[in-house]
Every structure is written in structure tokens, then in C-alpha cells.
Image (tube, rainbow, N blue to C red; front, side):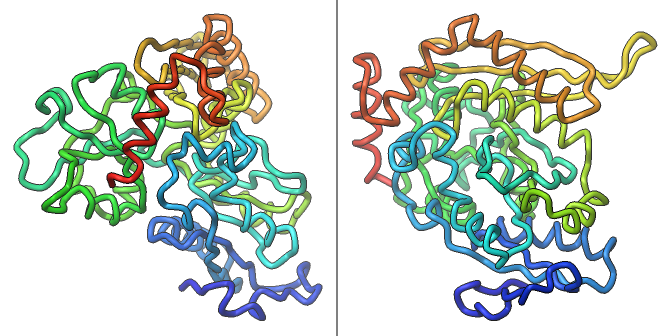
Amino acid sequence: MSSNLNDSPSSTNLSGSRSTTKIVNIGSRKSALALVQAELVVGLLTETCPGVEFPIKTVMVQGDADKTTPFLFMGDKTRGSDAGKNIWTEEMEHMLGTGELDLLVHSLKDLPTTLPQGCSLGAVVEREDPSDSLVMKAGLPYATLDQLPDGSVVGTSSTRRKALLKRFYPSLVAQECRGNIDTRLKKLDAEDSPFTSILLATAGLNRMNMQHRITALLPPVHFPYAVGQGSIGVEIRTGDDRIQKILSVIEDKPSRWRCMAERALLRHLQGGCSSPIGVVCFYEPDTVESSNMLRLTGTVIHPQGENHITASTASQVVSDAEAEALGIDVAEKLLANGANNILDQIRGVGSKNLSKPMERTFQMMEENRGSV
């Protein structure tokens, strides 16, 4: 059961008894999906920590309050690059620091790769399917992106998905579509909707029991997913050994190391939610010669779909440090192949200091902002 933190401030007062309390206060955004994910974590913790209560406290964050600004322009408001992701976390992190909350449950793809001082990634639970899904407007006969007529409008709020559409499906029109899952589906199915389809994370649809709306899964080999997509991350205070011990029994190490590699890549590229960066990361089958080989492929896509750069490598990963080293290695390969030329243009758009090739992209996105 969740409660609004603003409605019951006394419930979060730990009164200096943090070391002995039987209550662990969990912070979550207010969206339906965020609460489902928080409740999933509570379920895991309740099984392993009998006698401890895990109340969920909901917090309004900037990203939920601002439902119109495309993510590409959020960086200008929040100091650019990966800092733009603070729109989903900053308010909760403040409450974590003051002791009002003991842990925060996030969609890991929304969590900045560089956390504020005093905050740490306490755990990553077993990862869901990280792929993207195509959801077609109810009643339309199409089953894939390839079948859509030229000029069909595909809705998404993701810069990465827009860039992939422009790169591999140039006959389609990518248009901004913000909101939680229910809101986006209502926008799609509305009688006067401009959308023939929308793109959503498969994991979110699965967790919300909306698998029936999935028209097709987009294979990651052709449509690489976002860093951390499909994963739930739990953020804690650095050095809080009591909470870390509680979380250790629900963590899935392979999921953590996949995500640590992806996050290190993104951090090294200085990318964020305004960057068209996709990844594919998985453990290869063990062989007689090798085991625990984690393969990471990173892709940087030009936002206008003009080109993309891909790099891939594999190494043995059985620790956070080895996972991060893998991510940095792939990032360096991307940079050596020219990825920085694309990323520099994206950073220019985020600050509205536009390079000439990006000016038309900016204008088109500004024109589309009021249309959904």
C-alpha cells in the first residue's frame, strides 16, 4: 500500500532510531508502473525479512510534473548530459539524504549514471525483457513497422527510438508522445489520434499486465535498447550497511553486471536521456575455453538518422569493476570510430546552441510539441 509523503510527514520520521527500527521507508514515483515496481521490490523483501515493514511513500518528481517538454531539451533545464535524468530522481534523493526515506526504487534507465554524493546503487533485481515493443492502434491491420504506409506517425518520447526510426524506417514520422503507459495508450487509441502506433518498453507492458497490447517485439540486434532498460535499481545512502545487507538477498548479480557495463559506457560517453545511444548486453554461453563472458554492443545513432556507429567486445565479468571496465572499453571504441561527432551535435541541441545540420531537427521537434 502506498501513501503520499506530503500527506503523512510524521510517518517518515525515524527519530534517530535507524539502527533498530522495524520499518524501512521506500520512495517511489507516483505513476502506476513505478508503484508496481516498488511493490515488486517490497514483495521480494517481505519474503526475506519477516517482521520488517516496507511502507511505500510516493513523491512527485519534475519529470512527472512536466509532461510536455521533449527529453532532448530537458538537459538545458538540468545542467545537460546525464544530469537531465535528475528529473526522475532529485526530489527523492533529497529525502533519502535527510533520512525521510531509506531506499528508492527506480526504473534503472531513469537513474543518472553518476549519483549524487552520499547515494549508491544498492541493488539490481532480476532483469525483465529489455527490448522495445511496437503497439499498434486498435483495429489497424498492420503487424510490423515495415508494413506501415509511408507517412505513418509513430509515437515515442525517446530520442533513441526517434533516431532509430529515422535511420532504419525513414518513410515513417516519429512524433513526441509523453505520459505514463495508460496515457500513451489513450493517445494512441483516441479517435482523432495522429498515431498509427507507439513504441514502449516491453518490461513496462509486462509488469502492468498489458502484454496483450504488444503487436511485435523489436529485436535488439536491429533496435538496441536503452541503458538499464527492463531493470529495477534500488538506490540507498552510501555506507548504510543495514539497508545494504537487506538488499543483498534480492539482488541478481548477472543483471547488475550487465547494467553496470551499460551504465559505464553511457557515463564515459557523457550521454544521458537526451542521447540516442542503444545497447545490447548479454552473457555468452560458457564453453570449455571460457566462462562468464559478458558481451556488450553499443550504438550511437545520428538523431536525423544519417548514420550510426557501433562497437562491441566481450570479456570475463564477475565483479562491478570488471563490468565497468568492459563498458569503458566499448565506449572508447565508439569514440575512436567517431561517435563524439554525433554526441557533440546532440549536446548542442540540448543547450539550444545548434550546429547547422541540427537546426531543422530542432525546428521540427518544436513544431510537434503542441500536437500531442
